[in-house]
Image (tube, rainbow, N blue to C red; front, top):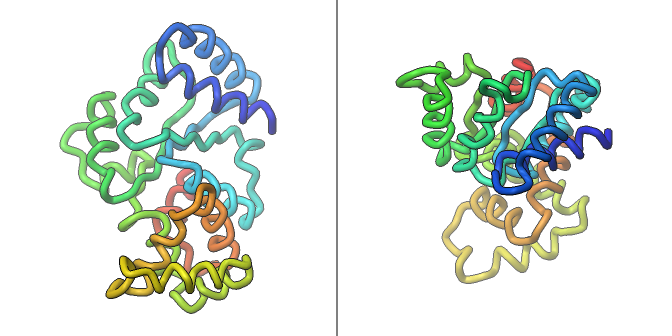
Length: 219
């Protein structure tokens, strides 16, 4: 829905601070109230948003209609700014989230500084609704599908020739097929998000990566 897109834009401006923050805060709070916003899922980037929306759709869920906003942070180091939006006088919505293993420390510190726990383990983070991908979203999806099935998806999307050319590059020699596919998905703007959706659609329902499965179950 258009209101959810507007909410995301206002929340990003609000979290960034600066002269536009007060107006953005008022806009975000008004939109949240009008939509019945109840949960905001904080993710690192657009590909996480694409994967969660695709998985929700496969399960017959419309996150917007349920009052759940998936909000890309533009990088894990920004989580503290966004968690501040849920403090006193902020948004009346519960936070949840998803991050890569390499960025887990930023999410943990952000949650602790927001007063949501101390000495948080990964299990404790999950109880709060925050889940970690090993090593990242693309790695989770590639492992769940297997390289042969991923290449079938790449072929169906018309990118197999580009993949084969990429795999012949000197920098890719000696890398596993999984690592080549993971890197390939980050070589063009928008490709990660495109394949996040495509790979979710290709997954067997019993092979959904645990962090995505548990996060959607939580919200």
